[in-house]
Image (cartoon, rainbow, N blue to C red; front, side, top):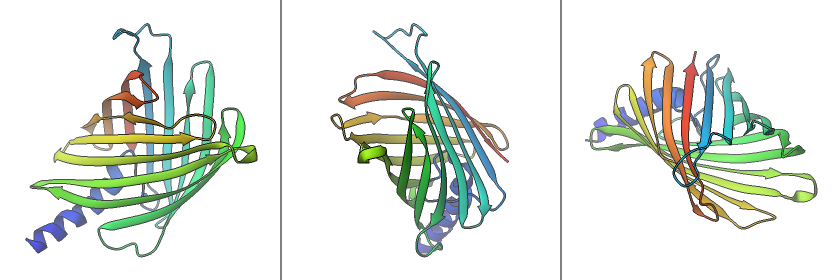
Length: 222
């Protein structure tokens, strides 16, 4: 039993560290690149009018085994409100099922210069014969005058089949100028070709946010 668990966790370190869209505490391998493009469509009364689309571009590249360079950008058609470049590196021992990583980013958010420090925790798990992982990603986007938002995402990922990933994510935030919010964001990811995935998901506000969105994304790893 112990040996099987060790093998499952080793499998997660190799597979999820490369394939998952939110790598979090798992760094990219040296020379590996990951790209993600997604679009969220807002719904109103259950029917979208197509007037509000939120697009994101997310990229990571392994500069070395212990240093990942990334880009996190997103916004609406009329307002591309976030462009953050960042570096991520491991914290503490890199071997074993539990991972910790520090991150520091800077760029523009809401048309204002911002810095974004963060820390990520991750651990491989198994649910019976199904491998998976848990991760917690915390970051603070800080504007001039120390205004900004403190965000934490909690993610459970499962890989029930070789080409399938199921994600359950709770997204939370505490803006300095408004009330805290929380959203649920489940999604399904399917590998269509080696290194290429499509993602279908939903985002539903549960605290200070009642928006309901449909998400479509594309992942590419090379």
